Length: 141
Image 1 (cartoon, one colour):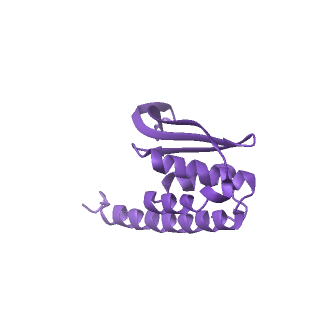
Image 2: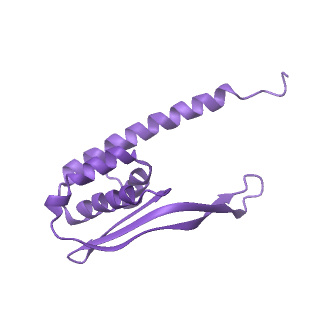
Image 3: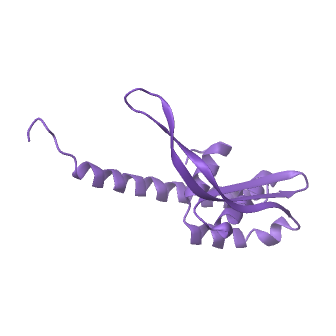
């Protein structure tokens, strides 16, 4: 993760973070955060947009089940949305987002996000290596 990650960058990393790790980390933030209000904790369906690589047109591939959480503390919001039916992981994401926004345990939150970004980048590289190994050059076939 970049040194100065944007809010969007952080949410992207948290949305893909390992569920067990983010839940465990968020547990450590509950006491420092103090009293919070849960505005929303639900599952739902969202449309999955895709881009046609040939024509560049955007279309909707279908619906994806997501879990969503929205929390607040002193007028500051935390938000989480993750694929699947795991409300605890979505709530954990929202708590990490809220802690960062409130300036609580900031260094620990940044370290967690940076570690997750490194793990995700490695997993992405591994996936791309597997995909590359299956490519066929039709000119030599």
